[in-house]
Amino acid sequence: MADIQFSGVEKDILQELMNIGFGQAAADLAQVIDLSIELSVPDIQLFKACELRKHIGTEADSDQEFSLVEQYFLGKFKGIALLVFPATSGKKLVSLFGLQDQSNKPTQHLELLEKEVMMEVGNILIGACVGKITELLNDVVIYSPPRVMIQDVRNSALPRNLFDPSSMAISMKTVFHFEQQEISGQLLLIANQESITWLKSALNAFMEQYQ
Image 1 (cartoon, one colour):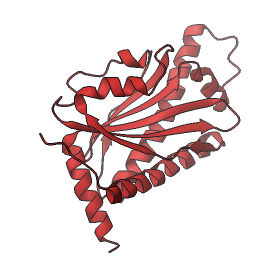
Image 2 (cartoon, one colour):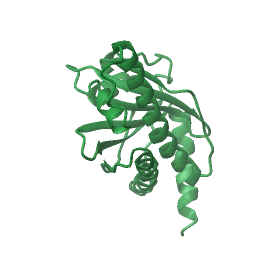
Image 3 (cartoon, one colour):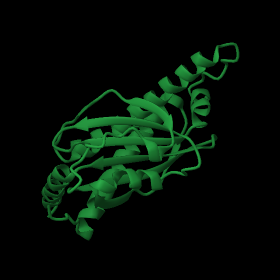
Image 4 (cartoon, one colour):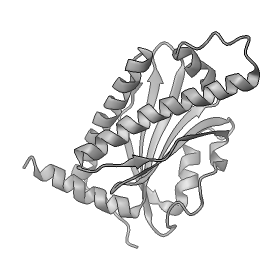
């Protein structure tokens, strides 16, 4: 398949839609924990789908374990959302949700609580972000249940057949930071060639509304 390229205008519009989506995600999460979140300017990259694992690995320090929230979304725009935290972030997120007084609980209970909080954060961030972007482009998506893994991201359990190796993939990344807590992470939205083709068409239709 031929490589797909985005024009400068298309990337600018997509970046602006992502800003809106991530802003909605931050607002939704702030309502839950009453804490503001700082978001970086989204970074958009196109690459060969066969380089997906390598691409994800370069986004994290391979010498550390990471908590990975993985959630699939399906619509005209379909793919996978990956929320990446340092593995130590679980306890800090628990405290942000006002659940820090867990000293008498067994370790197994605390680990389960951390996973539940990370899945809740993932549901809010991913749902608001993907939902807003697709809403603005006249699409509706459904989501798989999120799952949490703690591992070296380079060895992530991502299915090898997630994308056709000959196709292109798109990564849309932002880095977020929770105010008053040293918690930073990355949200990546990764879509395959079929979705990229639809996305280009949808972006141009979106631009035509304002021309």
